[in-house]
Length: 358
Image (cartoon, rainbow, N blue to C red; front, side):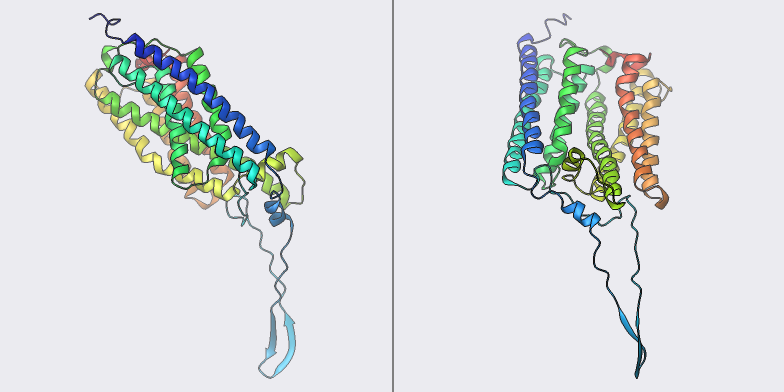
């Protein structure tokens, strides 16, 4: 078969144009998010700081020594110290816009531009698939393109579902731009047919679930990272410290540390069973393609290491002594394992999965 003849060059070129168009729109969304954070009024910022630094008036309970009256006794109010690992009763910040009309306008523009960029990038993925009539994730370039599309799609799905995750928008768009920059600069591969080992319906099942899991794990990692910063900020305020003006203006607008911690845990816990299925599906595909289900190939090993790391995180969250920051560090290590499984193994390690390389 003439592989070149099997590729629709017009659709392949259209896909490339759409990718660069999406990058341009993501750049505009990035600028809109910057305006949302910087130009939005700070008039409503400071509520959380007040909640942490202003002690509530202690309630004094009066009881008598006996039924017929007697000496009144004032119970000494109990001082309750709450940990910063998700149990401190702190209200959420007003969000990236600071709760003001001007900031909210920039935020809405940013979300609208992100939605437009997502649609353009999704069209690029579809055009890439149609150009060769196959799943659009046969190499690292296509995987990166689809990964960023799914990550943005998951973020927008949370917004449509009524979840206030706009605080994630700036970091998400920044990461997507970096991902697409790396993909188009160093990972780009011409649209072409698959190598024989990838001609299987398991490509649709196994790789698509891996992409989805990675995208959701990424959202969890963003929330975990922001949790660490926000938790340190709350700790400093609770101890009477005064954060710098810039740090305060940014961190004050984030949800409370407990909210970020809960969000990260829920998304990681929700997608973990699907990651388990991804590994099982890969083993079944390996049995069909190579005659063995598990051979301790580098990709298989790091997929399992990633599974163990996330299992350790979930177990840590279920253990009282490992909630909060300790569990958050485990979650970030787990996502780092996922990243190395994709980039490190494909680029630096000799593996049967090297066909997924550049």
